Image (cartoon, rainbow, N blue to C red; front, side, top):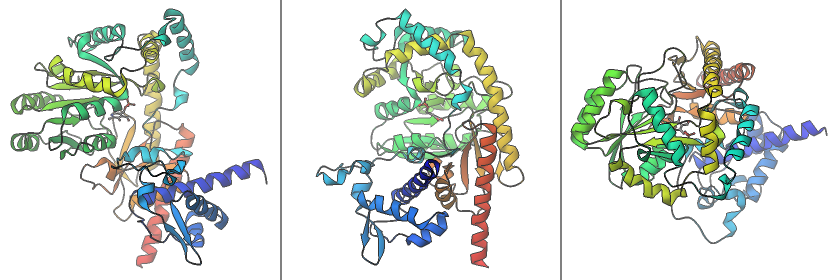
Length: 482
Ligand SMILES: Cc1ncc(COP(=O)(O)O)c(C=O)c1O
């Protein structure tokens, strides 16, 4: 057999392996449920029976499935599976975790696929990789001992001072280096806030839909979530006020600029109004600002942080998307009364973000090269956004975003997004199902498609395949009904 054929066979086998795992994890197939027969699965996934058999056998070898003579394959005991460490054959050990945690987005990201529409990440080919590697060498010349020490818990002072100056120059916001913390991505900032500022039983406001890992991070702490819709014109301010008045939420986690997943931006008048409400009802506003620099027309309004005079806004600004994703650098700004609660949690978490990453970031972020690059990047991403929209036009519904990396799409009610995801993964395509972005678990007719990761030809192909698959599913369903 040709090497390439062998590889393709392995790929198909691992796709089935992953798809089965996902259905079990999401609770669709429960402990001791019977799996579709090898033949039925082969037909459904359009692969050879032997491929399915090998995938089932691999899962059985790992204890995720078990086989019954002449009856087929069944889902194995779930406590072994849900730990997420099944690939290490952990079930042979006695020790088991007591609690099951979830990160639904990373479950989808674990699948390595050819058509990547689930990752809100920029195509590595759009980043100046050779240029960045030169910077790395310069950093070692400038700071020969950079790897010989820790950073401070708050982050490198030189970088924090430079960022304080940046906020002043760019937004006219006066912030001291002591009010800035360098975190390992915004993801870490969200987690630190969830651990430092809420306790079990607290109430937290959150947008609907929202960035799914934020839901999972807050839910780790057994808090009560209250959802407020975000629409193209922003929030329903009366609803927010009513919730703040009645429920007294501890904080409101929001992503108000080119929101993930919708791409919507909260208008200036609501920004000012919300700060007033936060002061009146003593509710912290956590502003997660990842896409501020990724706009296609005019720049977005200033962040909430700019309007805040009383220290109610905690501002998280990630630079991890477009500066150098591998560095995972984000900046958390909070006034001292709030920062003092977050610092110990950061110390317990990692004692400080790696110094080397901070130095490389600083050196590159303030270079003229990066600033020029961002301008080109916006154009390249805008072209991909337009391509995706053109491919979807006339079928699925969406609002065209003015920035960010995602398209929030509504599909016909007759299409099961879960089934589409399941079948897509089997065909090496990934996207984010809307339901995991909804704190209420609805929005089952939505999905998030990221246009930033694939080049135009791959994007065109990927969308074509996805739409064709969706049409097939709907036709199958119509056929069954008729
Ligand atoms: C709204 C939002 N917050 C946080 C993050 C995580 O960012 P980082 O890569 O800095 O951890 C993302 C990434 O997609 C995001 O979209």
